[in-house]
Image 1 (tube, one colour):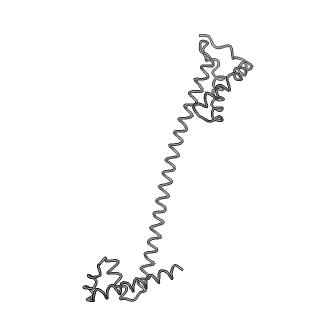
Image 2 (cartoon, one colour):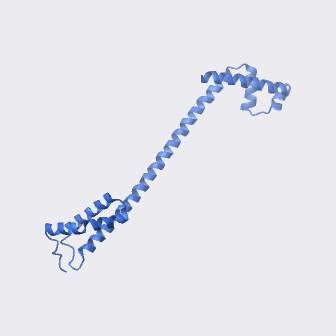
Image 3 (tube, rainbow, N blue to C red):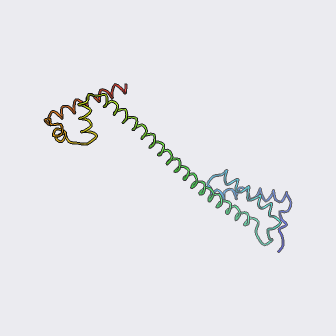
Amino acid sequence: MQEIKQIQSRREFEEFFQRHHADLIRYAKKFVYRTDVASDIVQEAFVKLWENRSHIIANVSIKAYLFKVVYNLSLNHIEQLKVRSQHHESIYEELRDMEVDYYRDERSILQEERIESVRKMIRDLPSQCQEIIDLSRYQGLKNKEIAKKLDLPTRTVETRIYRCINKLRELVSSAVK
């Protein structure tokens, strides 16, 4: 088959470029939606045409060849965007997981510090309060069970719990200030 002779010279190539450049950009823009990207794709297609001009056979329309190259380059561009998007999504998920882990660890450290601070405040309370809070809050006993264990009336246990919690609140609020 005969090689194409009609765009062998630089001048012929430039004339062909001028005739079809705008149409090819409009065509590429149908796929990639951005003029700057479409322009880059068309530029690349013309570079391929120039580099392969000696290999294009005579019975192939150069215009059809160029539209096919623009089509393929546009699809390649779209595929690259998909791959980048998936890559960015995986990076985003990894960063989000790292952030969640960081704040979970940070939160647990802060919670431990607060719990330890409250425990220290409880140790600073009178021994009756320490015992009542331990039985009520840490061992989870009900007021009647505490009353039975300490051999006290239930109402006395309720009053002590109330007073101890109030003292603890005062300590906590003074520590926060």
